[in-house]
Image 1: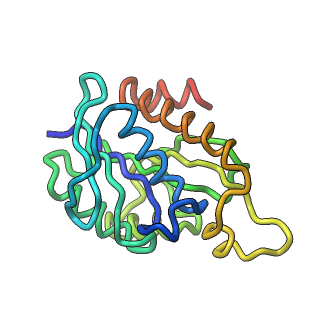
Image 2: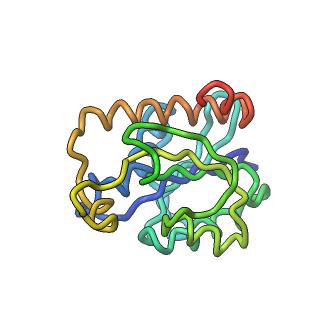
Length: 185
C-alpha cells in the first residue's frame, strides 16, 4: 500500500510545459528528481513514478488528461490504491495567492480552478489536501484563462517557488498536515 498519492496538475505536451498552469507538474518533476524516483510508467492516463521519501511509500503523478479532466486520472489512480483517497495531495497553481506564496489547504472548493473542479466532481467532495502555489492575478485586463496558459515572466523566481514547494511537500509527507500547517503558515 502506498502512503501518499502526490499529483501535480498541468497540461501535457511541450506547448504547455512552461505555462503558469503547469507549476504542479514542475513540482512533481522536482520531487521525483530529489527522491530519485523516475516518472516513466503510464497508468490511468497519467505518468507516474513509485518510490519512497525516507520510510514513506509514494506515487508521484502527472495526469495526461488536460487540466479540465484531471479528476479522471486521479480517481482511477485512487481506485487502484488500497488507501483510496486517503493520503492524496494535489499540487496546483492558484490565482488568488500572490506570486510565490505557497499554502497548504485541507479540503474546500475549487475556487474556479478547472483541475480541482474535475477532481471534486469525481470524488463527490473536496476532501483532500492541496498545496497551492500562488501565481497572482493578471494585470491590465488580461483574461485569467489566457494568463494561466502563458509563460512565467521571471523563470528564476519560479525555480525558488518550486524548491520551496518541494520542501513543503516532503515535510508534509514526513510530519503530517497539522505540523506542516503550523510550520509553513
